[in-house]
Image 1 (cartoon, rainbow, N blue to C red):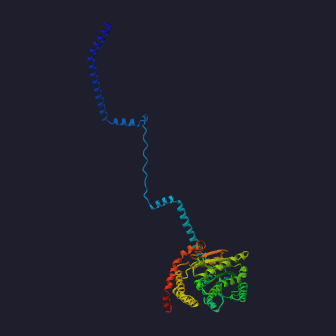
Image 2: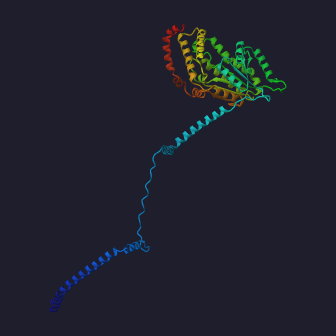
Image 3: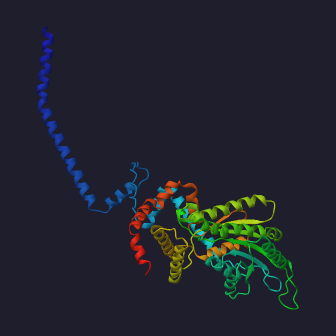
Length: 456
């Protein structure tokens, strides 16, 4: 190193050593000044807090619009109020979840309510036959049914009460007395012997002349003409039903002659008058037993099938004529059977046994049991006869079921549907044929005891 540079370094070091005491004094002064400043601000702050001016200054600063506002977070959503579960709320929730089921239920209930309302409204409607200007009766109904039948008597009394003149065909003097025993001037017997074509033609000719002859019910009153409104065929609803093996040829002949040949002859005799008077033809036949083709009821099934075929053919033959042909399929009705009727049924069953000596004990026991079971079932089941009366009047006066079939009575439509579409095996299972076969075996085993009890 040259000597000049060494001299300059020594001078610098010497100057720095002389400055060290000055730096210590400077740092001491700086510390003292900062302490005094801090104490001053603390004193000023404590003084300001003792006066309300500080609060007003703080509020002024916070409310100043020129200051920058910090963004505030959005408030949380209010908590949802959970309503207590009630029946109405549960129902509304269920309906909203099951709309298809709800619509079906509403449609079913609405249809039922409408049908019931319409039926009650129809029941309240007054049904009266039209009369002449003088107030006399002018509409005539021929009720071709057995005077011994309770259904014939019920229909005759109802039609007479509604303003019709009712004629009941009779073929013997006891039947005529039975009709006259009602003591109703407008329920009259009509002598009609269908076994003789000549006698039948003469009777119809007299009846036609009577219908077309002007009537003078009261003196000094204008005459009026009668009007044949309807011919009602009511074959026996309870023929002598029994197992086919026990039915003799003579019983078949009597049953078919009374319930098939006689109605056919009556229709043939009255047909020209019905067409000329533009009347209606009503046939009342049972529906339950013929639809099911029940055992031990062959006569009833044969009678109904024959009448159905005859009426169907007649409709096609006179389709060009203004003749209203209506078939009424009857179900079960409440005839309010009493104990006296049960006694009559027992007597008729004993007479039936005497008329069929070929029956064995098991067949007679089965026949009596069926008759007693029918009595008990008819007592608790069946529609009101008022329904049948209203239907018959509507078919006569209002043209109900024109050219078709009307089902009336409990079970009429249902059993017809079952007999038409359900297989016979299923129908037999529903009727419990196997159970009845086992019960027949038990009756055969105990037939001797039945014979012992019967003479008493």
